[in-house]
Amino acid sequence: MKTAFVAVLGALLIAQPAMSFADNSNGKNLYVQRCAVCHGADIKGTGPLAHKSNPPTPDLTTSAFKQRLHEYPGVIVSSIILRPNGNLIPKTLKENGVKIPPHAWSVKELRDLHEYMSGVISIKR
Ligand code: HEC
Image (tube, rainbow, N blue to C red):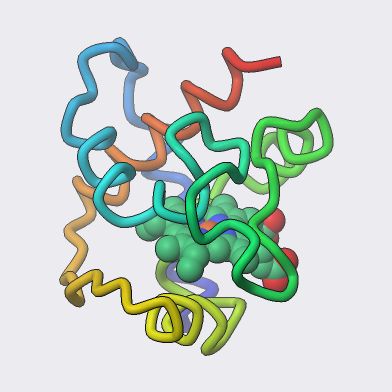
């Protein structure tokens, strides 16, 4: 069921007309508040907790990840909804005393975050 939901979400994301990434302050805020502590402001895996987990936080601006995003546009949203790493992220946050309060994501927020991150990823080389 979850996979189907993500597939539908992926389709919605793609169907949405592209907006200017520079204007996507909502997506950027969500990223900065909830992801940058590990993934880094540049999405290159440079946040303060990036090397506190095993495996460490990957650089998501590599050509390998661009290819992954191209083949599986739902990968960013699914990393939030499906939590493919199980306990890894909550555990890493807890061990390092970082609190990110739980969040009930709306579809718009997921879309904004997806658009912000894909924009930065495709600009970076
Ligand atoms: C506690 C640190 C931490 C936080 C916070 C975090 N991540 Fe990650 N992220 C990781 C690690 C570590 C991996 C690699 C996991 C692995 O290889 O199993 C990862 C992997 C990913 C991937 C790659 C998934 C794939 O299948 O290729 C995406 C996309 C991602 N994270 C998005 C996010 C988003 C979006 C947020 C914020 C909502 C976020 N992450 C918050 C540590 C974090």
